[in-house]
Image 1 (cartoon, rainbow, N blue to C red):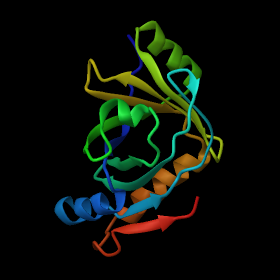
Image 2 (image 1 turned 45 degrees about the vertical axis):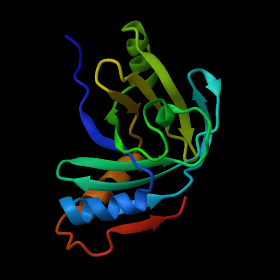
Image 3 (image 1 turned 180 degrees about the vertical axis):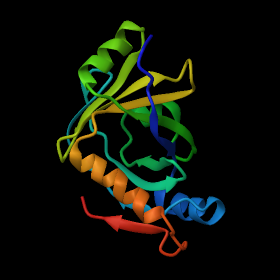
Image 4 (image 1 turned 90 degrees about the vertical axis):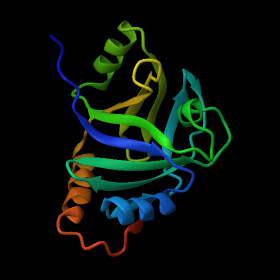
Length: 174
């Protein structure tokens, strides 16, 4: 029996994360959202080749799961463009924490799944997206949750507890 992957986040591709965050807060009570613009990456590979991935995301809480609202700023091929045009909206990926990213990716390769993105954030967090679009209709994001990432998830969750709906979007500096 394999270890279950437990989703910690659902991500939606959106044309405008600020407008989407305001709408999600107003219509669903999700939030508040923390916006990171032009998220810096140390490096990224799209389907094995070096590629720029200029993106912004807003992160908020929806009950037990984090919600990410993500958009891409450049026109190059990417995991976002694999599923959505710039003006389209929809579920893009489900994110899961893993104990060992290299082992998790090897397991996905052995199952015949393509690794669509491998990257490292400016703060040193390695992550990857596995293309499950033919079986689940979206990507699967995998990453090892270091202490900084766990703190961020806890902060977003804590801010959602008892949130009164004010200031649905809060900009963070990268």
